[in-house]
Image (tube, rainbow, N blue to C red; front, top):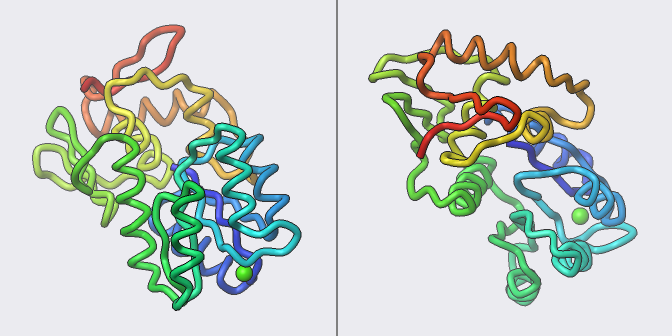
Length: 218
Ligand code: CA
């Protein structure tokens, strides 16, 4: 899963990036509203964390512009503690949830998990199939109850396919959602990751549909 963080305060942006990366997400940063619109247009994100007070173009305008363009990417807005009016405006402009500043990283991560699982039609933070379980709160993965150690990229791949269970995901889409924009992306890397995942989790979980992509059966 790949997140765009839109925040002009460098310290908060760095904390957000660290916290999200530790939780397993690929993260890109944008420091102003115009850059955020551009990034959201050219890249595919699983969600945006959007501060409302931004230089060049404020967060509400960013949100309205995205929705006008038909971009339905989930958005979590960061608002002022006592700013109930801007929260109402933000939600009505198409935000999926909000978090008042200052916030705890744990709460931001929980709200993000909830947004991402709502989008993919999941009801609980534990995703699973074929005896494999992935706990999105702790990044723990088990096979028939036995703990399995995954690398960060293996975890991202498994998490993405489980969030999109039942849908064949093309390799290009996986590249978009597993890597941040500072990382070189090669389709070969996906094949290698899948081989390693199958070795760890069993060959049945992830099916290859030749010429189309990969799927975890619903
Ligand atoms: Ca700000």
